[in-house]
Image (cartoon, rainbow, N blue to C red; front, side, top):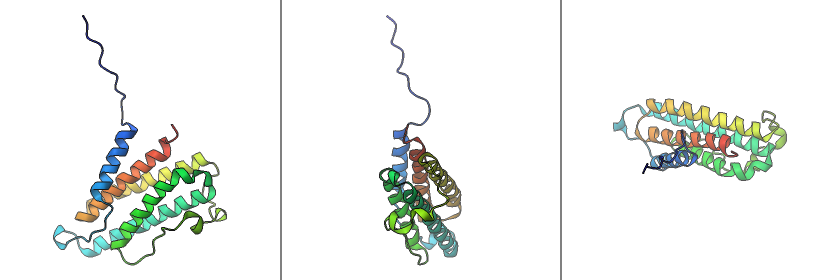
Amino acid sequence: MPFPPPPRTPWGVRRRSLIVSAASAALLAGCSADPDSAGHGGSTSVTARARARAARDSQALLRQYDAVLAAHPGLAERLRPLRAQVAAHAAAFAEGASKSPTATGSPSATVSAAASPGVPADEKSALASLAAAERALADRRATQLLDVPGELARLLAGVAAAGAAHAYLLTEGEK
């Protein structure tokens, strides 16, 4: 008697696998901003500059989320958890950087719909622009983590993984 054919397994990365791996990386990094110790290489000025740059990048991404939310209030339920994570990333980077304000307030309080001319008019394009921004920032952070020591490299890696997961969820969430 012949054996049944093996079950068909889909090729490529499944959504659940991507989300679990991104969540694992984020948990590994812990989104904590523990100070780097001097014994891990890299000068403190390089680390401070990298942390400040990462905080500014997260703040800019947060403003982009706010602009999309102001222009497309119907996306609030879908974007709110992602925006909250971006705000947590900005706070984690800013915690060890020089003093800079973090925008963790409500999106409607920071940006008005009239002040978001760069946001695409339709929701699908707005989500695609956010996904592109998340992807570009995740790629930049993955490159930057090679130049920083210990804890900051872990934090950058975790946040880059989360950004890649956000980009996936923004583009594949409706499928």
